[in-house]
Image 1 (tube, rainbow, N blue to C red):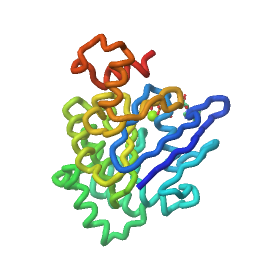
Image 2 (cartoon, rainbow, N blue to C red):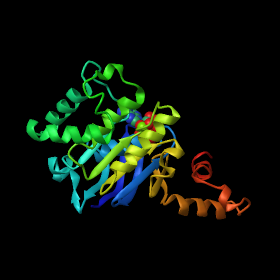
Image 3 (cartoon, rainbow, N blue to C red):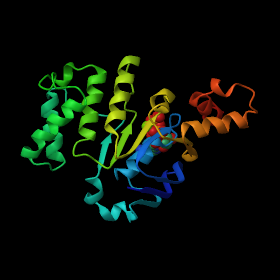
Image 4 (cartoon, helix red, strand yellow):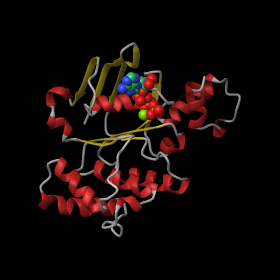
Length: 247
Ligand SMILES: Nc1ncnc2c1ncn2[C@@H]1O[C@H](COP(=O)(O)OP(=O)(O)OP(=O)(O)O)[C@@H](O)[C@H]1O
Ligand SMILES: [Mg+2]
């Protein structure tokens, strides 16, 4: 599994939302950190082919994803940032509906949906209407549809947005547990969402990839750059975020 982004650029008129973005991703969790407007959702929309790129290449195992078409789309799971929810559907009906959209046969869908409901701990609420769900439960239903069919590439755009701390931690743990043998890209501006679960952090600012390394490597780097004027143990990814993105 290898996802390569080569000089990926996206312009909206005069505005460059993504500027010659290059990175190589293999199995693991990638935390994409950046402030509002940095280009996180734009990058995700390009990988999922929801919008057209201006230039550059995106390759999966060496093949251009636009040429792979549905062969690539079948390998990705996506949880978008803005989502209309189907409040009048029950969790299980929503998942059957998504299975139909993804072209999964009803017979196969049954076992898969049972698995998904277990993964996100919604077995008991399966037949309740989404309209009555808490924010965390809604996010879990959306996570379930994203991992339906065991994707190789999982794209999560702010999966913990709007959740209280307890739900945030729960959701984070679900993501951690479900993310084996996949390339997971998780966008957020909340450092603690990715600090413990991401092997790699991508720092994004104004459409550019500023740094990409493990949380430890980045923290070491910033500690040195700031003249080691603090105990190393006192520093964490929050300091890295402040150093690169808030100035
Ligand atoms: N459809 C569009 N038309 C024009 N400009 C757009 C469009 N979509 C995004 N942009 C601009 O592109 C830039 C990147 O936006 P994007 O949504 O990718 O940022 P983001 O990092 O996901 O931000 P957030 O944290 O707020 O979700 C922003 O300046 C935004 O205003
Ligand atoms: Mg966004």
